[in-house]
Image 1 (tube, rainbow, N blue to C red):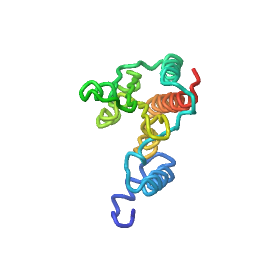
Image 2: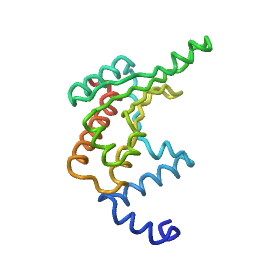
Image 3: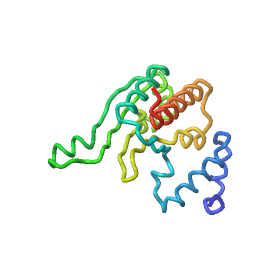
Length: 175
């Protein structure tokens, strides 16, 4: 793929974070394995352990947010909104938004288009086989981008850790 793009691609690849090639390969593999679903390639997911309730997932998210000093900044209860509009029961779908304002500022100052990824979102989705939790693959932003100054990368890596902790603890019902 790189050979088709020319010399400018080589310059860009040479100016990315360490691990960019491996991350690009992981994303490409997930994209192919999913039949071309780019969202599957750009997200992390965990199946929620059987018996874990929505309340336990939410408690896990809240606990991690407090531990890691990130702020809950909104919720969009999609399934309730759709049920209210249609009068029909909907499978559970809720988006939770979190933000670390200082990290958000650092990210946007480093790369204004990063504002499109704010705030951090984590979503609980009821599927035929049970509950799943999804969030953005932050390695995509971290490794496939140009090198970040130390304060930016430290802050972004901390938020990455927070989202992964929410994903793991939520899926396990650990709060």
